[in-house]
Image: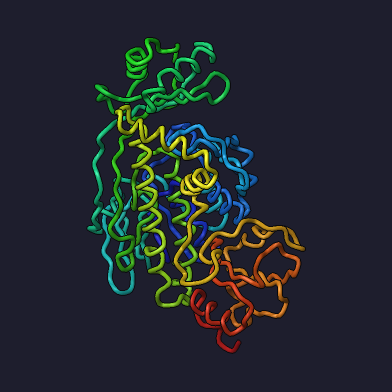
Length: 472
């Protein structure tokens, strides 16, 4: 029997497969596409996603394939520089196929099996597992099934989970293509139009190539063609700027939906199968990848037999509110892009408020996911939050998380993880730049305990990592 079948090998499915393989879980990923989609679309990897990739030793590999861009100005495109004091002042623009390939290769290197050209056609679950039928007629048995199969998720539909929200009200064309017009001409015209229409943008990507984002009013073609872009540019700007030879073309709406449940017994949902929203702020891929980091170690613990009873349910209780917040901030950003007088007035006011560093930092924190705080109960402000990378006496903190295990960082040098050493690493470092005597990090990099008392630590080790090993 397979331990986990994952439907979909996009960024979410590939990340989840790798996280499970770190714990020896037998994983099969099925992907309906025989080859990666031929879209060179640039996606944004935000601070928290880059941190979690660093925790698995992938950061350098993705950095060399991407282009660093300032993190300021990402909320509704309001041009404000990032405030001082952020852990990182950049995001990374990377072609989506590059991200997908890197994550899939990582999963395969760890032992995951990926089958392209196949998808889930149906499934039935019982107390012991899930029987899955693929589109080629093959029937497989697994202990769990996870739907990472996108906005039109077959798994979600077959599971009967509601997907409430709002249908699309506005459509937008988006693509990447060269333009022959001078950059100065394009920049000046874009600035003029964006005084009233924030949904109009030609962003330079280098070497004369631009990301073009324009309203799709009156354009019904799906997918759109180059002539549609030319037509809309002429209608809005009076010129098509000499665009030609598109790398890719697409259209998107502002439909916003959130699955009512992320888990029904042995079947779970992650990524776009669980939530959809407009691409404003570039949060979608990041949200899905971070779902996978949250779910992977918990599902592995369930399969390996050491998970505390409520652990797998915390996937929904932690990630569902995060997605709801992302949906709300994309709704707000879409409203702020409207050319109507009311939204324009609100945008002007918010632009003034973002001169205050606290406001700017708060909005950037929402987009980049560095302000997430899971509810782990009462405690210091750091409890339930991410821990930035730290210098240790033996390297960097994130380098100690490559195996996907928990970690106790102990400045007191008197605490122990005896009984949990098969699940937790111990780093004793009295010089660590940490405003706490000791803390416990979960495999996804969130602080699960702060203190200096061994019994209190043991209680929290049991809460997150189950009972100590027999005989310990």
